[in-house]
Length: 160
Picture 1 (spheres, one colour):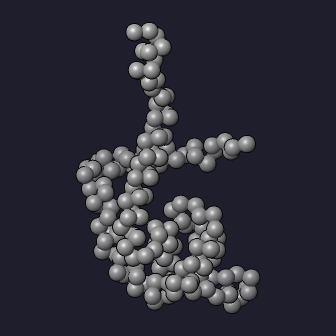
Picture 2 (tube, rainbow, N blue to C red):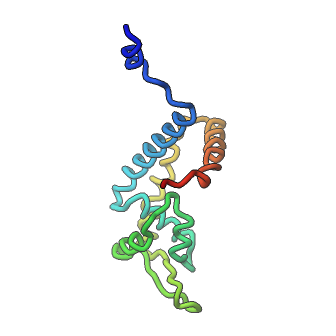
Picture 3 (tube, rainbow, N blue to C red):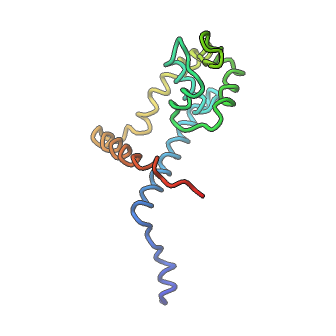
């Protein structure tokens, strides 16, 4: 076999950092799709679910758009449109702040609370169904390693 054929038969292994990054991205996508499959039975997205949970935790005062953005699991480029969809569905309400009219506060409505209450048992069981095969020490190590892995993410060079 020639060297060319050998190199085609034996793909070059990526550097360990590249392989680890790809595994993290694959895993995040796989888990995210699994969560989305469960949530879609209620007619909302996982991002909308995330916002409703944020608002439930911010009762009774509600929060601003920027505060919602800061608390999101994944960055959402258009929070205003996301909130508009939830408002049309009747899950949230918005009102101007009484002391500063420039500020709009978003709060969860009863319909949103009822939806979350309906989802709670399933969503509480979901992490166990997805990661329950890992031991407590494996979960602790996974969380520790993921936290360490995120440390340099904010310093990643921007594209040109």
